[in-house]
Amino acid sequence: MNAVTDEQLHEQFVKTYGIEPEIRVTCPGRVNLIGEHIDYHDYGVFPMAIDASTVILAARNSTNNIVFSNFDPKYSSWESPIPCPWQGSSSPKWSDYLLCGWKGILDFEKSEQFGISFLLYGTIPPSSGLSSSSSLVCVSALATLCLIVQGDPFQHISRENFAHLCAKSEPLIGTLSGGMDQAAEVLASEGTALRIDFNPLRSKNIELPENAVFVVVHSNTELNKGATSHYNERVIEGRIVAQILKREFSLSTPSFRLKDIQTLSGKSFEEILKIVEEIIPEELTKDQVIELIGNDKLEECLTENTRKFTNFKLRSRARHVFSEAHRVELFESACESKDIKQMGVLMNASHRSCAIDYECSCEELDAICELYTKHGALGARLTGAGWGGCAVVLMAADDVANIEKLPSLFVSKPGQGIRVHRF
Ligand code: GAF
Image 1 (cartoon, helix red, strand yellow):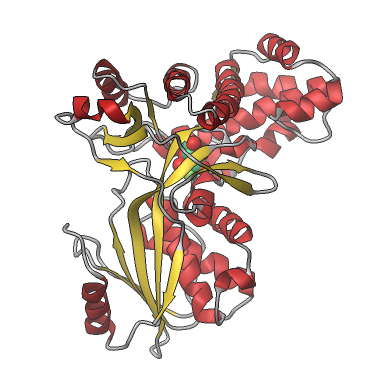
Image 2 (cartoon, rainbow, N blue to C red):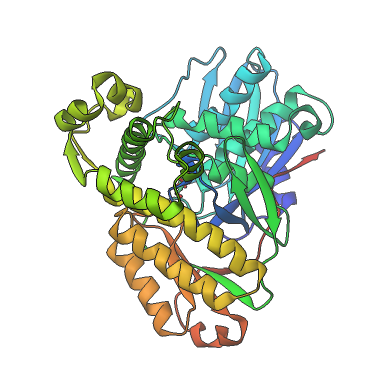
């Protein structure tokens, strides 16, 4: 679809609903530069918002219906009278993501349901690892909030709490995702990448070196159909590792964070890594996990949809998490000292770790990374959940001409976070 102007969207809203929109919310997608699959273990990540975005126009209506329509006719409209009984979906459509954000805010505000009309338009390629789904949750949540409260919504709830709320609402559609995507989309500032940390959620803006160019490249495979199940499997494997670490290091709660372990055990980073390699088994069946940590602890790890898993890879997953967390720290330092070569080295190592230890890459993503590296990329890695979708490539500004003929999606500059316009 060609880019649509604000005027066209406005016109479409009036034509569809016969009323004027009250609010426009715009939310960017994100590209994660490094720190993959570690947000849900409370480790820091390094994303930036991108120019592509999702836009929603919204108004209260007097029909007592919740109505969602999409500017793109390939997505059919969705409608429900109120009270709408929606509680989640395990095979989500675009409208289910909107319902997550809508429900999250109504619950938070303890608000009655009211008639609402949404018109959506988006330029973030779906199922591409650029977080189009979280942007749907965020625009819907913010539009709903703005229809409930007056003035600046972020005076009512901080951006951090809002991002956290959106992240907590999203698992209603079945993925046990962490909080990176919503945080990146809500907390981003134009011109800088973000270092985001969790529990509690916080972020700092990080200037990227001027000669660093990040290119987003589509592998031309959408996130594969098994991605949600693979993702949830990784989350559960991590929770099992955290249970083993809790027992081994006498932690008060299951934790993957080396800092927590270090504080308690007084051991060095290297000593702990060595112990972890020794005490975490490579692979266990469900029965073996029960033998090791007990059925009650395994139950604490599982959710209704993940009870079916019967085999768990643990040691290589833990290796990825610890090494990736360490790479994020090094990437931040390299960024601050404008060492783009080192940034590239870390991105390549991250991709290898994702592919080998975390097994979340695919042939097409590996091929894209290899192709760009052959053409002078300093670093190339999958971005987002993996199993399809996009890679992010780091080029030195002087070398960008080398890749002009390669299939890129866009060159990305750090974009602005979610924003609201009241008409
Ligand atoms: C998806 C999830 F939504 C994020 O929370 C994060 O885990 C990412 O995959 C992998 O780093 O985008």
